[in-house]
Amino acid sequence: MKHHSITWYLCVAEVGVIYATSITVLITLLLALYVYLCGISPSINQRSTPDRDTMSDLYECGDHQGSLMVCSKGGCFQSWKPPRAHHCSTCGVCRPNYDHHCPWLGNCVTLDGMKEFLLLLYLSPCVLFVGAAPVIRTLARHAISAYHASRSDVWAKEIWWDWLGSWFFFGGPIGRPIFGTLLGYSVLQVTQEPLGLPGQAIEQPLLSIAIVAGIALLMSVFSLTLAIVTTRNILRGQTTVEALKSQSRRDILLFVPQGIFLEEPSSNLSMVPSGRVLRLSYDTRLYDLGWRRNWQTVMQKPLFAPLFPNSRLASTQS
Ligand SMILES: [Zn+2]
Ligand SMILES: [Zn+2]
Picture 1 (cartoon, rainbow, N blue to C red):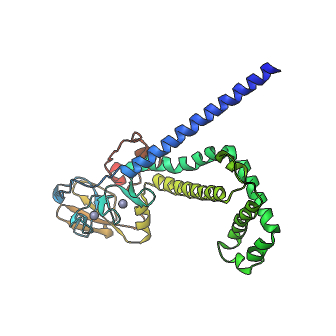
Picture 2: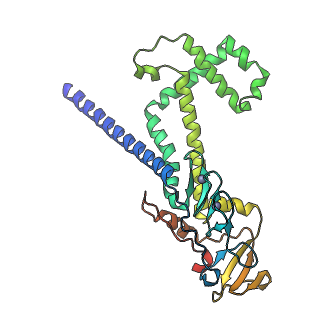
């Protein structure tokens, strides 16, 4: 019997060590991704404008003459804006392969950091779930008892449940039980014994713990939603800013240098000395190489290493 209990103890201790190790590794990876994404700042340093007449690749141009795109915002002073670059008004610079400016990182997200960004988005809810796993049932039990306490409390009934506004304010019918449950924690706290050791806090229904858990849950849902939207954009060969630009329904002008043959309708064409300018529909995805190659382009870069893939147009590859 004694021998049996020692084996049991060793098994439990081992599970504890495995759990503690994996959560530490996950949190460290999450922090590393966050710091990396906050720190990288790919901006366009080499701003010498290339000569249009010697351009051998297709590029998105600014007008029917095939002029190169320039940026006049912030400190850019009419300097050349390469294809897929975009001016970030928050950072005040043009970023190559720009996707969006992330306020949570305080930095731009570009295709060069997209692999890390996507990993951060998918990993955050996973880390939260693994981290909260040992206490999830306790937290749920507390929430249920707080809800029941709130429903049967005279004060909570008067200020919340019987008040007509509870159906309209603080999130309407969805927010009503949530806010009511939060009131329940205050109701329960009145009858609670004072806390002993700090670690025992989880044993009692505490409003502060419930709020932290609620915010973490909301952040996880947000992170997962953003991850799915970003994955879809990657597979479509589009950045967030390109997806938004296509909603403005402004046609795309594409400069095609002499010697490059494309099957194009001649009606949408204007000839210029060194080539021709094509007018393409606003919903044309210029950088779409097919979902498999789009995914590979983003994922081929080693983790934590900045890479500047040349943004070749889809049509030059095919
Ligand atoms: Zn700029
Ligand atoms: Zn920015």
